[in-house]
Image 1: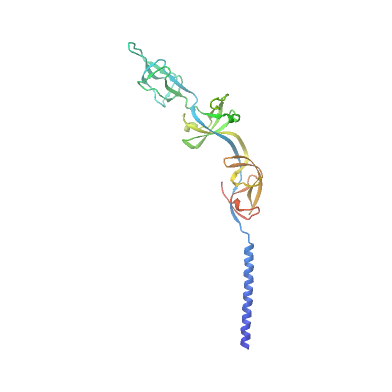
Image 2: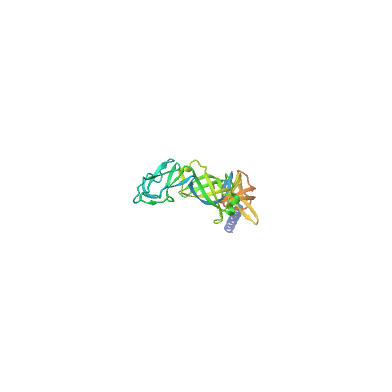
Length: 301
């Protein structure tokens, strides 16, 4: 009988131990279930910047002054004194033309350059027959280069003198040169429905890259905003007709309503809602909600 009582006591103590352990495990499970998890996001510190709207055109780099040279007589080219790329002075002899014919012999007539510059084209060949309307050479002042472009009629209202532009050349695609509008044709061509516009380089190093005859891409600036907030448009979240972004406030995400403006090349102006120094969520914004616990990692754009 004494043995039975001892066994019974052991069973009761064991039951109490497992009962307490079970309650403790359940309590820990509830605590883990209530623990808030954070979401890792990337943020970028907002800085004031500038934003420029533009229209893009194709253009051609040309010498500011380019003059074709002609012979004063018809005949055969007997001598050439220059080649493409040579610099010439005004009144320098560049070729000779012999106008002699059977029964009549004449002295060779010199062909002189009417301006100082560089030989940019030389269609003349020794032995070729030429007339007074044949172009023997083209002399250009390539130190003073311009960009000529045709602007469609629908954009003519956006043109103005001294208008700024950014120029890229296919041969130097990573170089961006600056220019400004110096001439606007007062008429619209009835055939092409466009107007001719001339721009002059303002970059000090333009001569290093630009050469007469090159094609150019012209970004003609139509509007420029200074000292504004501009953010990547992909960071916006839209809800019906309103725009929002998320910013990091301490360890929490805050959803902010914003008023947008000019949009250019993936950037958008923010007129209201954000200030310089705010930490904008640029990655992970689709995974969070207002007040969400976050682990913010500051990065660049």
